[in-house]
Structures are given as C-alpha cells and as structure tokens.
Image (cartoon, rainbow, N blue to C red):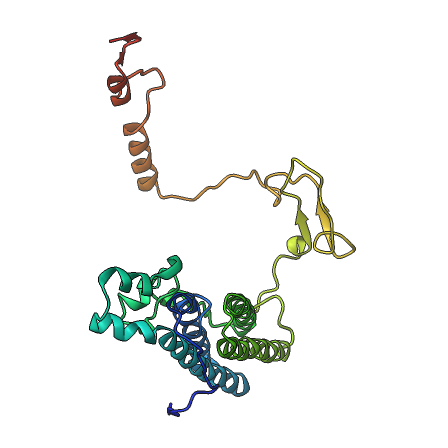
Length: 294
C-alpha cells in the first residue's frame, strides 16, 4: 500500500527560474542514474526478496526514492515556472520569447516547449526513460552490489549538478539528495555483508584453476603491476597463449548426418571462387574496366 503526503520530504526553495538548469536536472528525474530508475530497481528486488529484513530495506528505500523523484520534479517545475506562463499565453514577441526559454544555448526547449514547463520522464538529452535502466537480476549478492554502484553514480551526478548552480536553495536540496545516496550505500553494504559468504555471487564457486589467474592481455608498453594482479594471491601470466584448457582452441558441435549434409550442400553452393575477377559497381563507377581506363 502506498500513501502520499502532500508535503515534500525536503523543502524546496528556488531563487529564480532557470530553464537551462531544469533541463540538466532531468538527468536525475528520467535518466539512467535518476530517482525513478532507483525506485523501480529496488521495488522489483523487494517483491522477489525472500529474506524479510532485506525485503523491508528494499521497500523502504524504493519508497524514499519516489519521494526524491517528487523533490527533483518539483525543482524542475519551479525552475520552468517563469517561462511556462509566458509560453502558454504568448505575451512576448516571438524572438524575445525564444531567447527567454533558450538563453545561453541551454536547450531548455525540451522542457519548456515540448512539455509545457513540466517534468517529463526523459533525461537531459531528451531520451525517454526506459525499463532497461533497471538491472535487477534476482540474486541478492549481485543485486546489492549493483545497488551500491547505482547509489555511487547518483551521488556523483548530484555533486556535478551542485557545481553548476549558485542558487543556495537548490544547492541545499541537491545536497540532501546527494547525502541520502551515501546513506543508502551504507545500508546496502551492511545488508550485503550480512550474507556470508557473498563472494563469488550465487552458488557455484568457479573453476579453481582460473579463479586467481591474471592474463596480461596488453602489449606495446610497460606492464603495470599492483594488488589487482600481483602478490601471493595471483598467478600472473605474462604472455597468454590460446587454449588455456589444454585443448586445440577450436569450436565444434556434434551434428546428425542430415544436418551435416545440409551444411555441406550450403557450403558448396555458396563457395567463393578465388580465381574470379568480376567487374564490380565500383569498377564501373570509377571508369576502370578489365584492367584499362575507360
């Protein structure tokens, strides 16, 4: 059950309209790192979660993310509010109105012109929100790591947004949203580590002969070493060779006699003639035909 409180989770105070900033804030409204994507991610995980504690955590944070969606959407609408009436009523000359909503090349026509100054479910480039942003896979040891990374990315986006505005009220509200990303990371970290063991993800342990192997797949310069590829834990393979399994490195499949014959027929029918030298459209177009200029 969901209920709505008419008051926002955090007070929004916008000093002045700024359609360009509104357009940038859409990234956290309908973008990949935005609040709707986060709410949908945690909500879908919560529905399938079998552990009552993790289920409660996910549902709480999913619901809070909807509150954050309301905050960021309210800021967007406040930033667009000045031009909203002007555009609807057409009180300015055409050129002046265009400059007012599109000043300094801010592309704010996306919200002002196409969506009437509202908060559409798009990102700052005008790309519609998509469920492809929701990467739930149904395994908590994988999903909670993804959740931690998602909150970290959102924190960085809020930090960058704070750096492009001098409006103190907006900075404060964005700072609150950024801080909640930190709090959520901490909760997800605790929940993940409460599952023991939680690495590797899932049930299967992996092939032991390759679990601690590092293949040096780069050349053309010095090989850099660090804790990610050196020490007692790692077997460092300086020059990897094909077929690390000891086989011949080929791909094969067992087919029935009928399938083998059909493939042979296709291979014969589509075989290229290495001795052919056909005249092509490129030859004709360039005026070069049969070894001489036409």
